Amino acid sequence: MAAAAGKPQMGDRRPHEILWLRLSSFAPLSAEERSIIRQSCAAAAFVPAGTALHREGEPLHKPSALLAGWACRLRLLADGRRQIFDFLLPGDLFGHPGLLDGPPLPGACAASSAVTLTAVSLAGTGCLFEMVREPERFPGLARAWAAAQARQEAYLLNHVVRLGRQSAYERLAHLLVELGHRLDEIGYPLGSFVPMPLTQETLADALGLSVVHVNRTLQQLRRERLIELKAASLRLIDPPALAAIADFRLPRTLSSPG
Amino acid sequence: MAAAAGKPQMGDRRPHEILWLRLSSFAPLSAEERSIIRQSCAAAAFVPAGTALHREGEPLHKPSALLAGWACRLRLLADGRRQIFDFLLPGDLFGHPGLLDGPPLPGACAASSAVTLTAVSLAGTGCLFEMVREPERFPGLARAWAAAQARQEAYLLNHVVRLGRQSAYERLAHLLVELGHRLDEIGYPLGSFVPMPLTQETLADALGLSVVHVNRTLQQLRRERLIELKAASLRLIDPPALAAIADFRLPRTLSSPG
DNA sequence: CGAAAACTTGATCCGACTCAACTATCGTGG
DNA sequence: CCACGATAGTTGAGTCGGATCAAGTTTTCG
Image: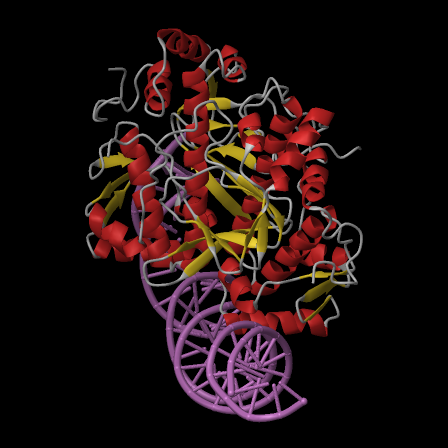
């Protein structure tokens, strides 16, 4: 499949390009840093859908980056209920412990599991992450990393708002707009058809709803011509309207001209 | 022993001790680092209840530490709904941007507001935080900081689980056990009476419930002799039972012998 | 001591869940 | 290429947890 025909821009370019583009959108990177990134992506690992990347409570190994495919972080309750914390898209980093300090925090354990939702390709956890530990030598990488972190936390806060204070209708609108913006950042323009590999059950586990209710709510969004969703493909027909419904706010984590 | 009579252990010691104890529970600190902490706490600022520490979208200033009193991070929706993300207790750090990288991430804005829930005393945002930016020189401080961060994220994940997949009864049990453990760490033994300055409305805004329902659910917990709650004082009568009800897991973020 | 804030209580309503089919789509092997 | 089972999506009926509305009552504090 690889290219999937209709996909615009750099949906799935050379593995290292997605990571390069993503990180350099957070902070300017030197040529040396760029070459480190390329090197780190050279040995990308392929992982099938439904694989656990790490499990809650396990000591966490090296952090890594998603180059292609989707994954999520989640927790399983004792009685089988599932809660998804966030989604990992191409270009996203994960596996960070407390982060970029010297010795890698011994005894630190993952507070969540991570599972692939589609087939996925992972950056080799090689030199790249040793580098991040030397912020003086690689200031660009270190800053990009920290900014990506901050961004992810902002998304987590969005998620808390959805779960705590929004209706099913608002939650779905909010999440879909958020994903739309994230996909926009990695080359799928907002308002066009973008890949949406999440099943309704996955959406339900993320949004704290039942599958049945996710289904009905999606239909409502379709009926109102706010979204188009078929196969594994989503189009936000009216992003501003969706954002208004959901009280969605772009994370102004950093950069951004004005 | 400063004040307040009935409070056990080091509930409210000299300001710098709480921060010292807290941070050194995360990583061993050198004498030099300790003196930095003391210095930073010397100029503690007093802030009354109900004060905004910072607002969403504002560029964030220096990070700081709570030495006494409670605060919370929250977001306000357009229509007045409120969602509380987490609570800040004595010894907690806040105001972290993306964190401890070199130049302080220009353009980074707070993704949440922070408000004091009681009168509060804040560590002077002086030298302490300049120090954290030089991890090579102050490895203990840097690691403690990162660990505290990781811990806070783990609590945020707990919160997502509560909101997404638990009943009102479970949510309250879960939050109360969590607070119990956090208070235990700062000198209020688990199972004893501890300060609980949160109003039912605050609990409601944290747990995504209505005030009325928080009230009824608290009564159920009292009726079942799981908690005792009066005035601004809470006692977890049966922490294991509460933890079982709530499927509560201690964050094993780091250290801890085993 | 009075007013505001916090907490209770009861009645009613509704958003979302559950249960239980049923249909469509997808991948796979015969 | 089709038959098949499996996975994902759809639909309807009935129920319930928690919201809302509308009084109270108590506590706190100036």
